[in-house]
Length: 408
Ligand code: HCA
Ligand code: CU
Image (cartoon, rainbow, N blue to C red):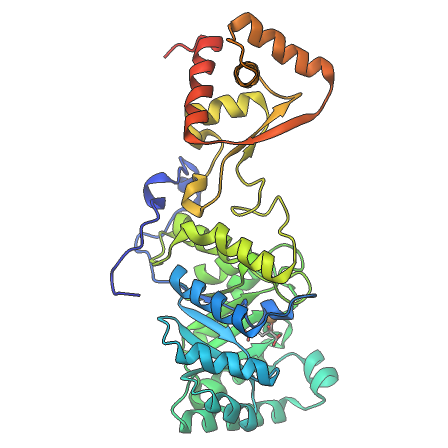
C-alpha cells in the first residue's frame, strides 16, 4: 500500500467506546501492527475446505486490496498449490507472499522454485510433538532447524521461524531454540498456540519471555479451541508481538484461528493501530470465502454475521435509531454489513407503527399501542425481519417520535 495513504474506513470517528476506554487504557503511541492472513494455508486446513487455483488467486487479490500486510500459502501441499504460490507471487501484490514450509532444505528448494522472497519455516518445539509426531530429540530438532535456516539465508530469503506448539514447550528449551534460529538468520519468530492451550495472560507471558532473549519481531498465531484466539492475539500484541495471524471467518484446523474481521477492528478501536485497511470489504470477503468453502458463517459471527447488526427488543430498536451507538459498537457500514430489525413479540410501538404503515394504514399512538399489544398476544416470537434502508430508518424514527411523543 502507498505509504501513509489511509484507506477511508470512518472508524476512528464512529467507534463509540465511551468510558470503556478508561478501563482499556489505549496506548499513547499507536504502533504499526501487521496482519498476516493465512486463509490460503491454515484456512485450507479447515475441515471440508479446498480452494481451486482460481479461487486462491481471487482471494489473494481481495486480501491484498483489503490491505493485509502478508498472505501465507503453502507450496508443498500439491503441484496445484505450488502453481498458485508461484502465480500469486508473480502477481506483484503489495502484500508480502509468505511460502509456508517445513524446516527442510528440500522445502526451501520448493519455495525457491516459486520465486519466493519470504518463507515461514516451522518445526515443533514441544516434547509431545518431538517425541510422538517427529520422533526426534531436542538436539536434533535444533540442529536441523538451524541448518535449514542457514540454507534459506544463503539464498537471500527473508523468513519467519515458527516454533510449533510453542505454548506447550519447555520454556528453557523454547528460549534456546528461538535464540539458535534467530542467530542463524531467521528474520521473525513465530509463537503459535497450536492447540489453544493459553489464556490471555499466558500468551502475554510467553511473548515477553521470548522477546526478552531474542531481539526479533514476533508473530502470534492463536488457535480457537476455547474461543480465546482473538483475546490471546491481543494479549500477544500487548506483550510486544507486532504481527497477528488471521484467516477469513477464522477458518483453520479444527475450529480455526483468529478471524480477520475481528482482529482488524479490535486493533483499530482498542489500540488505534496503524492499519491501512479497507474495513468495508470485510463482510464481502467473508461471504466470498463462505461461498468458496461451503462452510456456513454462523449468524452470530461478530461483525460479519447476519445477526451482527440485527436488533430485536423494542427498546433497543427505538434507541438504536435515535443514536446508533446505543447498541452498536461500530456502524454496520464500516464493515460492509447491514442493519436489520425483527418485528414480532418483542417489538415496541415504533415498530408496530412501522408495520401498520407497511400495511397502508396511518398509525396514531393508540393504533401503534394496540398493534404492539396484538403482536405480544399472538405469542408469535419473531414474525419477520427487515433489512433497513436509510429511508426506512427515517420513517421509523418519524413514527417513533409521533407515537412515543419523544421530548428532546
Ligand atoms: C501447522 C501448525 C501451525 C503453524 C503456525 C505458524 C500451528 O499447521 O503447520 O506457522 O505460525 O498452529 O502451530 O499452524
Ligand atoms: Cu495453526
